[in-house]
Amino acid sequence: MAKKIASRQWATSLKFIGATNIILIFLIATPLHDLGVISIILTLIGLFTITVFILQSKLHLLKVCCILCLLTYYCFFFLFGLGYLSLSVIMQKVYSINVNQE
Image 1: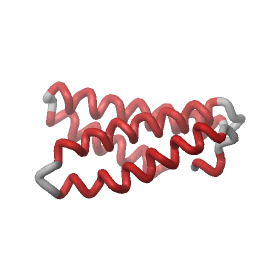
Image 2: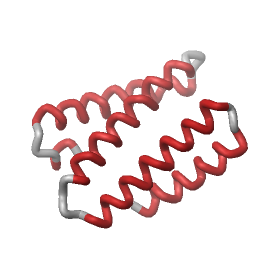
Image 3: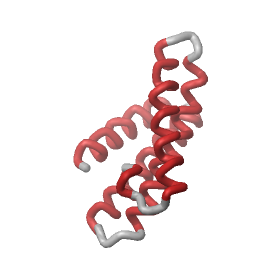
């Protein structure tokens, strides 16, 4: 995705976010699992950045898909953070279906 963004600064930041997420994703299977929250935050920043650049384009269907993706992702982590685990499981499935359709 970084190759598609015209702004060099934002493309570099997306590359950094992607590389850092690749490294941090391995922490999920270790006792350092709680540091995986950094990966979640970086993913949210990356998705937000991509959405901003897509909103500036003329790809209207992709705009709707990006907004739905962000909304479901943020809702999932909001519910999960507040401790509503049964609702967050449902929202996780909604997010997975939404991402797979894009």
